[in-house]
Image 1: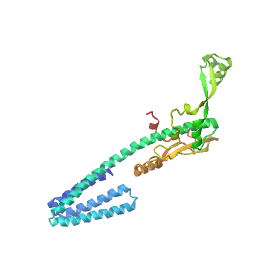
Image 2: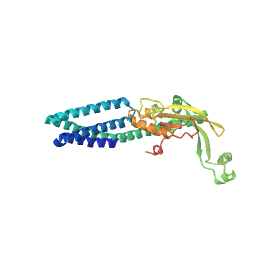
Image 3: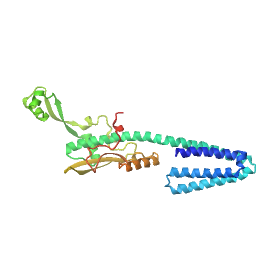
Image 4: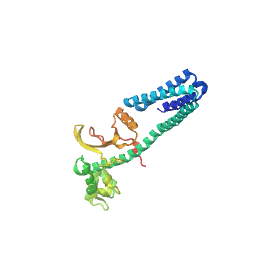
Length: 306
């Protein structure tokens, strides 16, 4: 596309020069030939812009192209009649179009740059929220034996519930650890039985909000960033893994929703690339088809500390 625009700028400048130049404008072969080439180039650019699928726009483009050529030819007859005003007007129009094509060239370069920058920002925030959902689901399953498909239930759980943790103080002496066959749990039980001073293993309950979600705004939980309150899709299922029934969950959002407002064609390209590579066209954590240990489908760069 960028190459087409560069060629368009060169062609526009060329046609403007031919129209303005007295000798060249009187040569019908050069004059009409340049118009025809110019018309074909405009149509090729329109075809590339629409990706060959928006037929009404292409038809409109053909109509515009024909109108431009008719105007040029009509102007050429007037130019042939030594009308300097028309010659200058046509030349100025072409020069103006050169600047417009230059702007198109700039936009064709900057649009994907701006898109990728905004995409990265939205992806990073969304990945962070999906990680929070995963943390909440794991805690929920530890307390209730299974995942939940309801975001509201998960939100209420992390806001008001608590989880079981073991308060550990002191370490197992090497002698006891070896006596118990290098079995840490047996060694810890033996230390408790012997009443070793300073060795503590207590089961306590702690508030989830004060441990896993410190200084977190719970109003954002389950909401896709940069959307008008749109919630993540979430569901649970059971899959077979080596003869065992495993409870799994999945939370996700489509690119079309997450990247709404950005360049539509670039979003379509992003989705097409994902589908061709058998990936979900968006961001998700977990899976309803397999036990993937609650992994996310995002690139590793989003796991790096900012």
